[in-house]
Amino acid sequence: MVNKKIGQVKLNYAHYKGNDIYSDGNIEDVILDACINNREKELLYSSVDYAVLYHLSSIRENLIEWYPINKDESILEIGSGCGAMTGVLSEKSKFVTCVELSSKRSLINAYRHRQRDNIEILVGNFQDIEADLGKYDVITLIGVWEYSENYIQSDEPFLEMLNVVKKHLTPNGRLIIAIENKMGLKYWNGALEDHTGKQYSGLNDYVDDYDRKVRTFSKYEIEEMFSQAHIEEYKFYYPMPDYKLPSVIYSDEYMPNIGELRTFKKDYSYAHVYNFNDAIVNDQVCNDKMFRYFANSFLIICGNDHNREVFAKYNRERRKEFQTVTVIEKKDENRQIVKKRALSTDALEHIKKMQITENKWIQPYRNLKCATGKIDKNEYVSEFIDGMSLEEILFKYKNKPDKLLVVLRQIIEHINSFDKENLKYGVADKKFEEIFGEYKLGKFLSLEMTNIDLITSNIKLVSEADWVVFDSEWVFDFPIPYRFVTWRLCKVFYDNCKAYLKNSFNERKFFELLGFEEGEIGQFKSMEENFSCYVSGDNRIEQYTHNYEKPVMMQNTIFY
Image (cartoon, rainbow, N blue to C red; front, side):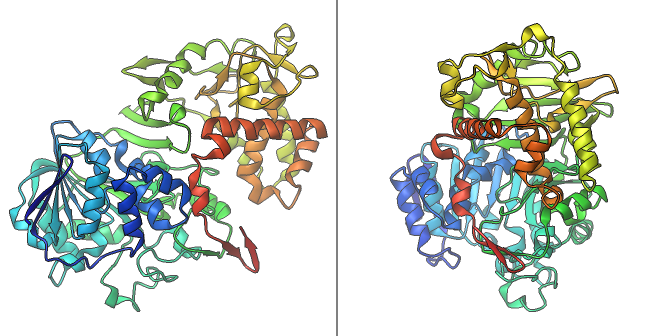
C-alpha cells in the first residue's frame, strides 16, 4: 500500500520501510484509540502520562499560533509527530506537507485532523523523502533539528540539515526552528535533559551521551552554525517555560521583567530536584540582562521575515468563552500596539466587552486613568503604555519587607481614592452568586461597576501624576466589595513575591498587616476560588496541567 486516506488527510507510504524505530511505547496506542474515537479531550483531562500532555495539549499551538503566515503559503513540517502543530499550521496556510518517520504517529495525526483537506503526510525517513520534495514558503523543524544525526548521514549532520532544508525554501521563504537551549536555567536547576533523561547532560556537552545521537546547543553555537550555513537573516524568540508547552513568547525586542518568570513545577516530564529557588534566580537573570543566554529554549525564524510581533501571551487554560491571546506588535521604532483576540468564536463576546466597559468602571477613581482601545477585525487594539508598572516599583523593596509594606499601603490608598457617593452597601444578585458564590454583602461597600483585575502588574506610572490601568478584561456591572479588589491586588503580589517575603511573614500575616480582618480574608479567599472556577470551569477542569505535575524536591523536603 502506497497511499491511504483518513477522512480528507492523505498518507503516502512510498518511502516507509515498515518499522517505527521512534516511539513513546504503548501510550501511543492509547492516544491513537482516543483519536479514532474522538476522545482526545477526555484522555487529556484524565491522564497523568506526560506523552499524552505533550502530544494532545492545545498549549503546544501557542508556539506558532501568533506568528503571521499567509493563507496562500505552503508549509513543509518536518517531524510532524502526532500532529500537535499540524492543525494550527493547516489553519494558517494553503497546504501542509508533513514528513514523519513513524507510521503510528502519522495515523494519530491523520485521525486528529481527518476533516482537513490541505494536509498530506509523507511517512518515512526525511533523507529518503527529501529528493522528492519541492519548494515551500515555510519549513518547520520543531523539536527535530537536535535529532539530525538520526536522519542525515554526514560528518556534520546538524549543519548539513540546515543546508539541505534551505534548498527547499522559496526565495522569500522562512525556516522555523524550535529547540531546547542546552544552557537553559532549568538544567542548572536540576531538570533532566529532555532527550537523555539525565541531569546536566547538555551542560556537560554530552560527553557521556554521544551514543544517543542527539544534541542541543547554546545561542552562540546556533549562531555559529547559521554563519557556516550562510543564514544571514534570523530572529530569536524565547518561549517560556519552554517551547514544548509555552504560555508566553518573548523576543529580543521585548524581554521579561523582574517578577514575570515563575516556572516552579512547570516541568511535567520527570520528578524534579531543585538546586535553588527558580523565582529568585530568574529575577536575577532578568535584572542582569542575561535572559537570552539562560532561556530554556529557542524559537528561531530564519530568512526574509517581516514579522512585527514581539510578544505573545496565552490564556488557554480557561473555558472557551475566555480563551485569549495578547500580542504586542511593533509599528515603528517609537510605537507599539497591543492586540487581544479570541482563540475561538466562543470568546469573541468577551473581547468585544472590553471596549464597552473600559470608560465606565474607571469613573469613580480620582487617581487612575484607563487605557482605551477599539475593536478592529474582532481584535481589541490599544496603544502600548510605556511606563513602569507598580509591580516593578514594589520589587525594588523585595528584600526590605517593612519598607515594601509602607509603599504598598501608599499605593492602595492612592488607588482607592473614590468619590464617596459612588460607594454603596451592595446586595449580591444572581450574577454575583454565579461567579463569586453566595455571600451577604451588606457589610461591604461596593461600586456599581468593578474591574477586579486592578493588580500591580496592570497599572503603570506614565508620570508621577498619571497612573494608567491597562487590560480591563474582568469588569462586572454589579456590586462587588471594593476591598475584595484591594485584597486581590495584595494576594497576587504576595504570590509573585513569596520567595522574598515568606521568611518575614506568611500570607495571612501579610494581609493582617495591610489591615484586612479575619472574616474578610476568609470570604475573599473563597470568592477568588469561585471566580477561578468560573474562568477555568468546574473544579478548574481546564487547568488540567496540574494533573501532570510530578513530585519535586528542594534539599530534603518533598512537595506535592
